[in-house]
Length: 167
Image (cartoon, rainbow, N blue to C red; front, side, top):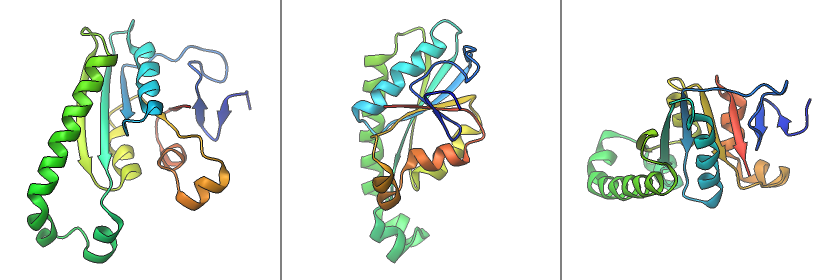
């Protein structure tokens, strides 16, 4: 396996394992507002800047553990917290818009999506309408991934499109 490639994921490379430049039209960029996700967005820009492609930024706010485990995501729970989630969603959407304005030049087509739920599952669902996923990673070691889990690891394992992982 070429250096920089692991389990179907590319770590910081812009070429396929055979050295062929990957051209994509629709790239999904999951954003957690870390420096890693900002670098991922910059790499995604490299892919679409000359090809006229588009970038979709997505932020998935995970439900708090206690809400998912104890209360569940029921209609009653959604109704009782609707105002809270609407405010959080609006704030995260504003942050995505600001990041897109900062990193992406005006001619680049973009969309911003905010969702609440299990991040890896929602990213994989959105990826069905894209050619590639470009996402950042915090670079945890194997023990950290095993203990804490990793959205990036889950997405790489299950994605139906290529995934570029940027440190």
